[in-house]
Length: 569
Image: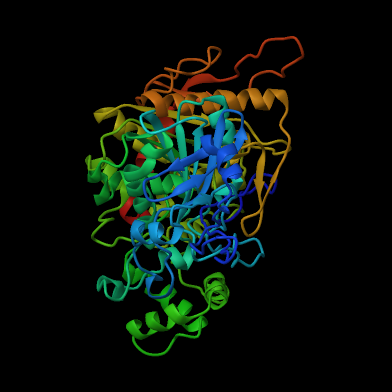
């Protein structure tokens, strides 16, 4: 998605990919397996023995990042999606191959892997960094966790508009350090055209597969179910979590046909991006432009896909970045999940409204000024976000958000209309649906990042992940946090991990934090805000409060939900 309106707000990059440097297998007895193996040195193995996990098919050495925390980085969960596997569903990890290649050696999993190939963030940069061989996970576990520890598990999916993102920019070491009673997994999945290329020809699975990047996430959850016990986790106690496109992924997991596999027991959706889920036919013009720009525009779609499988990564990266105005003027100009009729069969909003979703406890919310649009042309922004929206639907939205309600500021009116439709109304729609059949808790995140004039999209990432401010092609800068900000981050993490541990954010919250009331449209939602400045020698005070949603806000979100067919989400 494009950057937030405020240039100081953190962009929504996040990272998920993986590959390790290949080493030679000669005199030092290091084997080429897609990951570096440690030399057969007894002293190395002995000194790090407590940080080695044996999955039964491979042994992985983790990185002791805190005295009580070990990070196992770049653990493969599927076969490399290379060659003929490009644009296809992931192939489960061949553990027999891994056994043959590692020969009982210890795989060095102490460094972050390469991230998945990036697309442009739309701010004048060129994408293309990363690796195509990136189907891996990072696992953060308490030191000493082992099979039988049966710790609850958080599986995190990063955002970035399904186009970019690097999990390294959102580390979880400090979460485990604060609460060494969970295991956390962050997932690398294919992005942009590599993960979400779609053409009607993919209806024939011999040609390709729809939603490969989403199926990567599903395969990661299946790998977690089969293997997380080796890291101390309990596969029966998995919570899925994601922000922005990661939040959209959570919503899709809750309604996809794979929800019946029992891969998770609870969910957290942060700033759930209500992006359209178009049909393959609606994505056809994008596919044709992309194929032609990559040098594969001749022949049938089957011929074009075969050509694309042989094209260089650089050719595909240039083609996916070019698919925006002025070169490509189609309304559906983003590589994203589609209605494949098999895994994703309906718009998520309709599934939530009709009760066709996984009945699990849910946390869902957004930031106060959440939006990924800017300017003053409301109609153009709505058409850009929802290509099938009609003039009548646009006029109905504008009428529901009269300019007089925004001090005659068209920019604020636009931000509110688009923010509700793109992001914020997911809290009402999903919170209401889940409150009827399970339990739900909703929030409004209300703490701006330092220097920002409002609480923009992804603001909570800066707070929850050590002051991360992401940049181009998988990069980030970590900024120092004040004692007040560190205390607030601890409060947020405690709520989140309490939910992971007990499916209730209150069970293990900090003592200073208020009780987070279960959601109903007329009851309180929580407003997550930092407390007063922490002075030396004084106690920490929470700034978090509760509020009741306004009747106007509820009515507007009902209108947004009623436009499900035109907004296609």
